[in-house]
Image 1 (cartoon, rainbow, N blue to C red):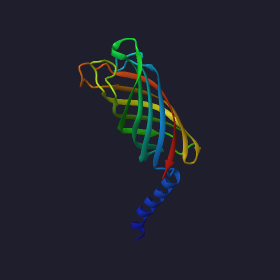
Image 2: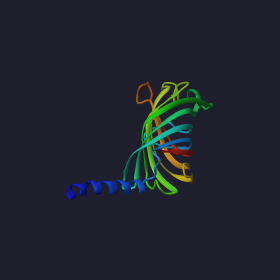
Image 3: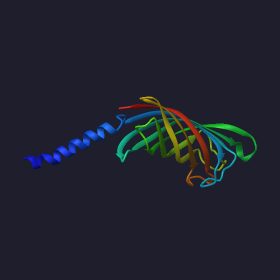
Image 4: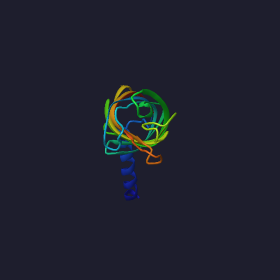
Amino acid sequence: MRTSLLPVSVVLLAACAFAQNAAPEKHEFSVWLNRSFSNGHAFGFAQDRELFLAELRYARRFATIHGVWLRYQAALVPVALLNDNVNDIHQRQWVYGGGLSPIGLYIGFRPTKRINPFITNTGGFLYFQQRVLSPDAAQFNFTVEVGAGTEVRIRRSEALVLGYKYHHFSNANTAHRNPGLDSHMLFAGWAWLRD
């Protein structure tokens, strides 16, 4: 009887130790404001464009491995503003769009500490009110981004979020032209953590 209780006791002790070391917050809701400061060349060819994104993000922790949090992450983009050339001439205008990034991963490296570095990526789409980047391109564009930043706990359940991301969008050759746009972006936001 004692030998059969030994594995159960070890499992219970390990679970208690894990519960004490892990922070209880499982859900995170955040607002991010993103602004480009330069265009890149990795996948996109359009240049001299500015991009602003306002995002509502949700993340849910699904695993903790050696003190590293893995979270599913999604972002709703109610405001996407692109400073674009009109009809490939030098006249500039802001074009409104919006979108969704339902696929994402957030990896937090010191989640129980006051300063929590992280890396993140998401994928989804943006839809603009008119064709963007070229008159022969599309209104609907696919997005992918990768970034890094830090969360600074201000209170137990609130944090300031700061970081950098590389953002790409293009129509994936669904239109006659596919210039694509790569943007170096800085972001700042506020996060609310919940059990």
